[in-house]
Length: 591
Image (cartoon, rainbow, N blue to C red; front, side, top):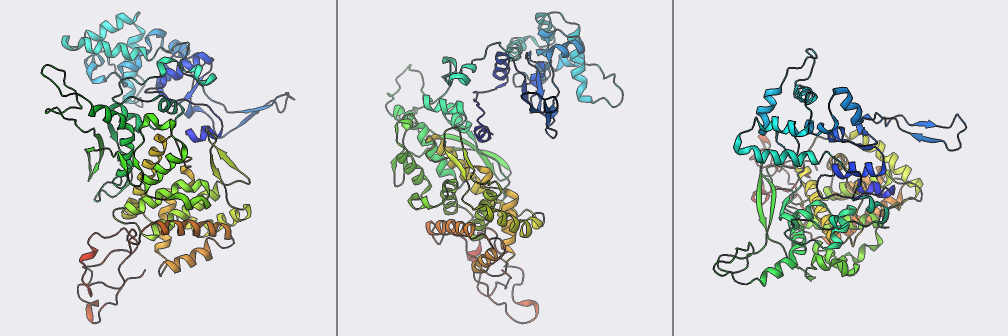
């Protein structure tokens, strides 16, 4: 979303937590409606009204002024606009009481179960016939009750009267906090940001952070360049790793990316760790510091990662890495904005374990992704095979061709070129035709293979971790366009096609040249260059090579141990027990 808005030069800002209140205040400052998909805006007093996204007629672009000789004809989309005034008039509810509708029916501040007794007391069965939705019964009951109320204080007293005495104060605080979020201001603190790119002091600090957040990091966060995971580490030292489609019988797909995350945690906590080392030993009566152990020593900082283990989510303590092989000590996040780009690039390359000096000949849009793929193959467990790599590279060249336009260059908000097509336009047409003939008809033929999906899930996890690390390094590499380097359905289909080609790598290469790259020599040269670059930077032991197929023994029954020691379909992820296979027990299979 951020990248698309940057391409169309649409300014944007990121809030710390809930953005509803700031969005409504900004709309009131500019006297314009809010376009969104959040029911909270129905009960906010927004001067320009609320336009639900689902009510926007995307399919029919209308024109105005073309037939009336208007000097400035324009195009527009029609929509339905909601205003709080008409809402209150329809339900006969005072405007200042509408916030209670969202509050008592449940939101991020109030759990409706704690006021369940009150809801039961006012509940009325819907009077709109048999087709009335049951879930709307409470909404109508609350609206009917609000129609009989005069003041907010009266409403709160009626609600609290149904709550146990010991819980009333806690519920009152929650209700009042929630109600404040539905009263937007007429002046937004962010308005200044959109005019001169500056923020008021109230937006220049992140309250409650365990690790101090430097100014450059906050500024990048406002622009949308710093992901929430980084702020979670600095504020709570707690992270939820991304969940993907993967094989639950295997270790989490996030495991191969763990070394990258450890370096990320080391960069974020480096200065905090140094300050902790100088902490004095606790004396009697002194307040306990969480960074000091009972014996007065320093307790190492760790990050709590919540990740999948089998079918369950488990919490793991992960220690940061403060040294990077072939680089040395990590750069503290406080000093990142003072370090030159070449040094930050070198740290990124060392973290990935790749020397990127030779990749300058590759298109800029693929350089970062190529380095991540090399890291993934080197750390994949179970090992990836050549079909994983080929399918991924084929996916890249196809998606880039599909999005290419003559002479097109996409530039993000920082001025970096993130997408520039290296293909001649004539070859783009030929390549798209070849894929349409040889790949599109098979998109639904190959079912989901969980072993193959697990390998690609590991690659995605490595890509996410590398992009997070690149962000905290103040983006030494342009952020890759994800839509140009990955499509789950496409890579699975390409893997299935490659797996169905008889023979080895040479036969697969011949098939690709004859069917997919025929008439597109520039694209073929790019594909071969990327393939050679990856293969030259990974060890021979990094890729899974299936054991040689031996002819089965003669005689009835097709040989001893038929069906008991089969390795499964060739091309799947490495069998962890392949080393236990005894010669003579392996049957011949088609490649």
